[in-house]
Image (cartoon, rainbow, N blue to C red; front, side):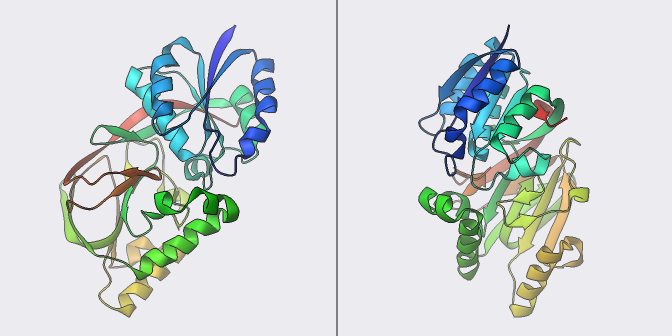
Amino acid sequence: MKKMLVIMNPFAGTRQANKYLAGILDIFCKGGYDVNIAMTQKAGDGIKIAEERAAENDMIVAIGGDGTFNEVVAGVLNTGSDTPIGYVPGGTTNDFATSVGLNTSTLEAAQSIISGRKQRFDIGEFNGRYFSYVASFGAFTSTAYNVPQDLKNAIGHAAYVLSGITDVVNIKPLHLKVSSEGYTYEDDYIFGAICNSTSMGGIINLKSSDVDMNDGLFEVMLIKAPKDIIDLQSIIFALSTQSYNECEQISFFSSAKVNIEAPADMPWTLDGEYQEPCIKVAINNVYNAIQLMLPA
């Protein structure tokens, strides 16, 4: 019998997945798997569990938010294993799940792991640390890890939007030098993201036609600090209409590698999780890195 390891974060999002755990396990068992489950208790547990047990299983399933999925992916990749990964989204925004078209229903997502198809996806690497879909800095970046979990649970996506609006009011320009395959961008920026997703923090969205999550390339967005209200209005209009290339304050391009020189006190987020400041950052696209189960 095939073996499956389920790695679950019981504290993710509104904890809806907890209510359906018996149903999820029933689906997996009926799908022909001998199922074992491990519960994470703190940050980093998902990586450790996946590292220790990926090689002995035919499928690894993450149940939780994007941070939980991030840890499971990192753990699998750290072992050099090519074990297929399933994902039952249970977080607050579930950006990655939305981008790849996973079911929002908990039980339907579980069923898709059994009856779905495998598809390969690229993964990012930030100074040796893996991320699934986005590395970002500046405005909105702190929203993902500063909004209390209870507030996220109470008002969901609106928590991010409200906190993001507050963040805009307190924008602090950041001077960065960004080098990418022959091109260099140096300026004062209020936001930047290197992503492999159509959604960044649930606030900024990209056109699906601009994003191929398995082409070996990131989509890179850099937003310059506005000099006046006209610049700010131009940025807001470009983001709301997804007309990034028509705004002089926004640089938008694709690249497999990005090197950044950043302020010593500038934090990042990787898939919504805190990443401590780094003066020099090397971000690489790991092409074809994982096999993920998608709806048929």
